Length: 178
Image (tube, rainbow, N blue to C red; front, top):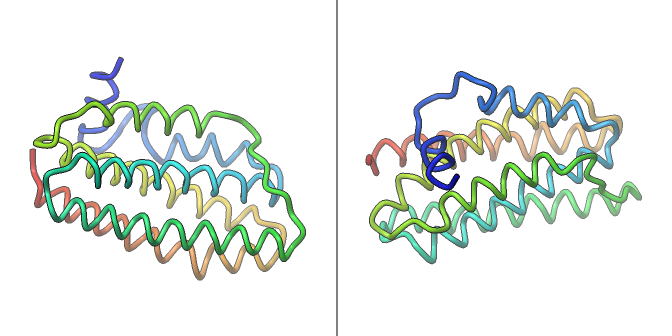
């Protein structure tokens, strides 16, 4: 099972039901409220933080470690901003299903056992996939958000970070190679 996850994480593109945008669509459809949106965004950030910590521990590539450090800092900040917004709006985040958590846990398990020499490429491949999925989620959540403050935060604060993260992940993946 781990090799199947690694093979998926390292494949180019994605043209089946595991396509990040298709996966995001199903997850986004489960969000019925701003509480669900905030809960799913927290879950996405949780996994990003976990993957970043793994990259710092395992990777032997200095650029990959630097990217992971940036992801830790920025996803911690995004998570804190959304948590603060939830408090301000008196919303308790909820997660409408465990689909995203299961998917992300599986992805993290797929890279956790890799050695330092090949970890960087697989981590960066996963980062491209994860940020494509997160961008699709954020776009769907912008359309679904009920509170204007949440819509604005997603559009003006969260989305620009995810776009930059995706571009950086794509560029570093190409440099790291396999």
